[in-house]
Amino acid sequence: MNQPLTLFTDKLSAAWRFTAQNRKVSVGIAVVAFFVLMAIFGPVLVHQDPTAFTEDLLLPPSAAHWLGTTQNGQDVFAQVVYGSRVSLALGFIVGILTTAVSVVVGVVSGYFGGVIDELFSLVTNVFLVLPTLPLAILLAAFLPYKGPLTLGIVIGVTGWSWGARVMRSQTLSMRGRDFVEAAQARGESPFRIIFFEILPNETGLVAAELLGTVIYCILAQAGLEFIGLGNPSSVSWGTMFFFAQNSDALLLGAWWWFLPPGICIAVLGAALALVNFGIDEIANPRLRTERARKPSLLNRALGTSQTSAQLQEDLA
Image (tube, rainbow, N blue to C red; front, side, top):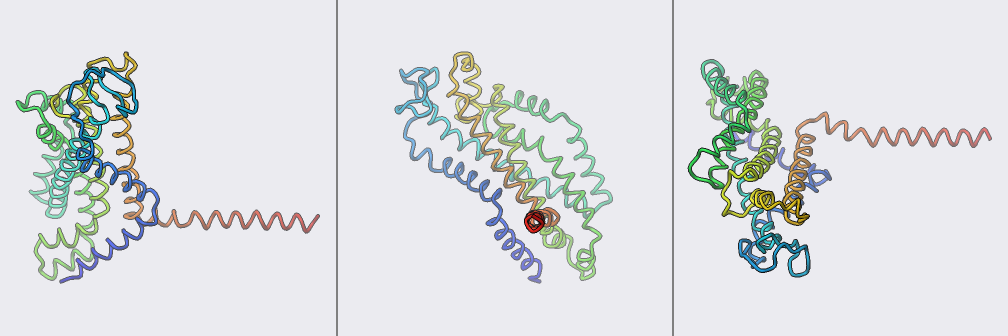
């Protein structure tokens, strides 16, 4: 009865050991942890109101204002710190919920097949062929409430179908494996087979999908808020782009207004991508084998070059 749980814990311990040895995963986790800590504790340490108007209009970075001020005298550093809370919270919460929907729809559809598979596949295919960006713009424009909740609903509705299709394909390939047939022969329930037999073997795929969805959510939120479909009264990285664009910050040369949130989004996306690449190496044995073979091939080449050098010295 505890064999699936033991297998899952063994995989977690192996993944943790591999993570500690993988530089990409370590660097990515460190950067993501920095942004998470900034979102949690930053507003506690930064006592300045990010929406407060002052007389310091459009000042460049200085000791008084580390990242300068906006056209209304608002502190850019305070906006970046406070904005990280909204952007990260929306990205991770919506990413987790969207991934959960993708996993449930994909795994259930791939395992049961038949009418259930046809019904779920029909719904998934409809959302796959819909243009995501125009649909998101229409939903965000016509919904009465403008804010993070609306953006989360819009991103969740438009972002689950691709992951569900991938999970369905992977489940179809595992449905005929020996361990699944053995569990069926023992009379185990479909719920237990799906979530204790099949899903633990798709952990790497689920984690990679989650990280990709989080990146998509953060970028989609920033894009929708940039074109004015968010709540202007809330402080986030996307609303910073919106006000910087409306105030012609680029033409005024106020690079400190729009560059910090752009760098934060780029660095956070790169960190999540690094973690995603490391998870691919954990989940794919071929990548681990090729990564392990590279030093041996290099040493072999160095050994060959040293042998050639010694031979030339002996002949001389």
